[in-house]
Length: 326
Image (tube, rainbow, N blue to C red):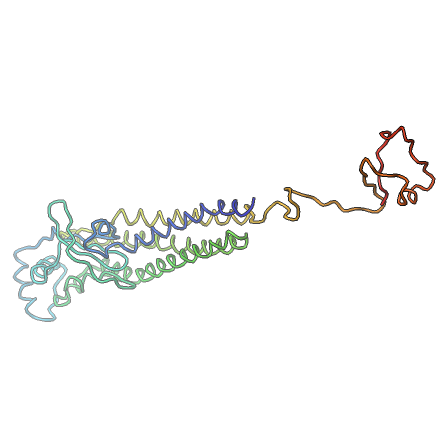
């Protein structure tokens, strides 16, 4: 199998690598454009505040607290504090969290309408105390211990998740570039296999981290804040996309590895001759070579090789075929 067969051999892993790269890009584009409904459905976590409840007894208390700086609210006043902040700072009904930032909007019936998205930021993590303007209320001091621990965990792990996605993105691009050289030889496939292994590792690590981390955040959010009318949920589309990237990356790595064992780029034909698989036989000493039908056995070479052989009869031209002794 020659160069053409080599090209056909690497088409499959190359296509899988491109598919994995496209999926990673789609994950990164989630929650970056308020005008795109498709990208707005790509989120890791959604905080829903539309059913936020407050009690009349705590509203007046928190209203007075908001007029003074540094007033700390208790755990039972979290809902009231959020209700007052929602009125004063226009806190939205929901917040979608992506890789680079978040989008916010209001709920109209069954429709989640995005009004604005934050500017993309490296190593982003969603800080509800800052985004919801709760610094003045001191509500962070009244958060349950489980919620505070989950936020601290989310803050630290989100940086690793972001770095893992960036490394996976860069490694996949390098895989595509190096994969071009795999057409030429199996050494190119060997190098591409190593790069594809790195790309697969970080793609799988980023996807597993995102899934586990936001599952933990969602459980802690609902356990500690659902009684105040807040609800957290995980997106479906972005997780399907990121795990598709893992599947494509794994398939590419396996096929790149397979291309190192088969589909050689060398031609099986001998280019010295005009016919395929031409073989040049080496002449060993004391071998015989057939002569043409008009050969004269009385020439010097034959008299030398066979000094005692009588000349052939003139009427037996087809009795035997003459050979040259070399």
